[in-house]
Length: 264
Image 1: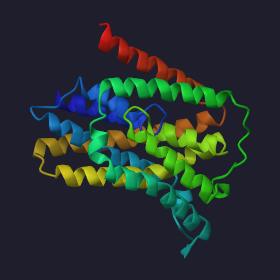
Image 2: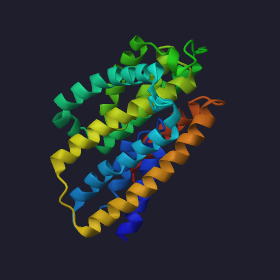
Image 3: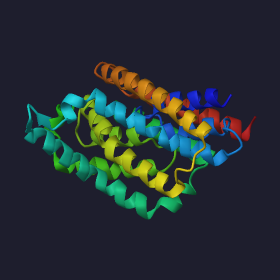
Image 4: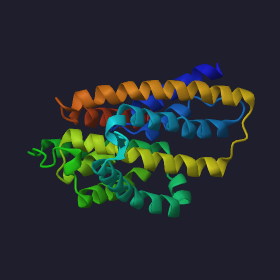
C-alpha cells in the first residue's frame, strides 16, 4: 500500500508543481489523507525529495535554451538568462532563510484554502485586463522585470499561493506575455526549488531505511515523467488560452476545502 501512496503523491507533485494551482497546497491536502508507514515525518521528507526530479524535467525539456555551451563555446545570451534567473532568485533565498520557521507555522488547511481562493481571483482579474505583453521573448525580459518577478515570488511562501502562480502573475503584471511569464517561471523554479529542497534535506537528514529509499526511487521516476509531460502540455495550452481556467479551478478547490473543514 505504501507504494500506491508514493505513486499518488508523486503524480500530484508532477501535475501541480509547474501549474498555477499550488503543488504545496495539493500535497498538504493529499498528505493529510496519506501518511506512509509508521513514520509520518517521512511523508514530508518524501514530498521534498520528489521535487528534485521535477526540477530535472525542466532542465531536460528546456535543455537547448538553458545549456550555455553552444558548439563548445560559452553562449552570452544563455549566460545573461542565467544571471537574470539568479537575480530573480535572491529575494526568495534571503527571505526564505530568514522566515523559514515562521513559514512552517502557516502550513494549515485553512491558510491553503484562503490562498487558493485569493490566488484564483487575482488570476481571473489580471486576465480581464487588455494586455498584449510587450515582452514577447525570454531574451527581451529585463533585469528589472526579473527581480520584480522574484519579489512577487516571495508571496508563494504562503502555502496554497503557488510558486508558479505567483511568478506567472508577476510576469503578467510586469509586461511579459503569457508564454514568457510561464517560461521564466519554469527557469526560476530551478534555483528556487533546488535551494529550498537542499535546505530542507540538510535539516531533516538522509537516514532512510531500504524500504523508504525504494519509495523515494518510485516517487522520483513518476514525478519526473509526469512533470515533463505537464510542462509540454502547459506550454502548448497557454499559447492559445488564458489562465482563467486555472483561476476558476483554484476557487472551486478552495471552496471544497472550506466545505470539508467547516460543514462536513
